[in-house]
Image 1 (tube, rainbow, N blue to C red):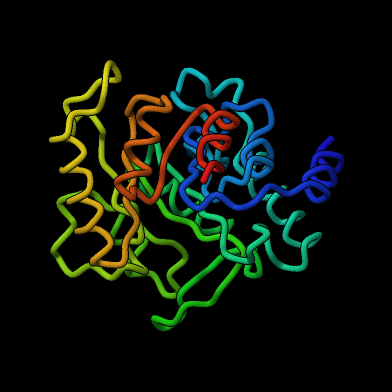
Image 2 (cartoon, rainbow, N blue to C red):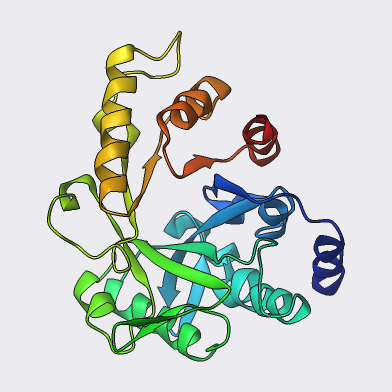
Length: 254
């Protein structure tokens, strides 16, 4: 089945949608592949460490039925990269893999780091401060052990920052994304038009984030066309959705 899915995706690529982020990607019928077939350029996986295994699940209640990080993401990505001559996305830019650590930050990160290290041709990394490109770039969110990630040599991933990180001079390669909760920043909850005060704040945050060379994302907002339109109009870099086809169709419009 995995070989078949890889072959199908290889034959029919959608144009890359630079703002499209697959939130909780692993909950879709075909994790990774459904998003890639729609042109999504970033996918999100929640990861738990259980013993020496990395399991992908939203909560600990799902762990008895969860599949491994390797099975859902690492092995398919490695196969796709080999099939496509060392790239995943059709435009040649790296696919963003957002790894949201859910438990045991240091241990879980050490297991993720081991997997990245074992696949040197698949992942971007930074050696002596210089970027070595690969078809996938990892950014770590959730309970991320920031010090362990950013001070490692080589550095294997970036960290998903928060709005308070703006203005602190953090390197955009080390903290490439700035993410925060929708409800902590905006009053609109999905009914009626988005208030101008929220739109103005969104535009301001985009301006501040881009001035530092970083990308902006919000989680937990309304997953509707009205919300996507507001985010797109404001220039928010990553629009997260669980509605892959609908959001892809919207973002594909001029």
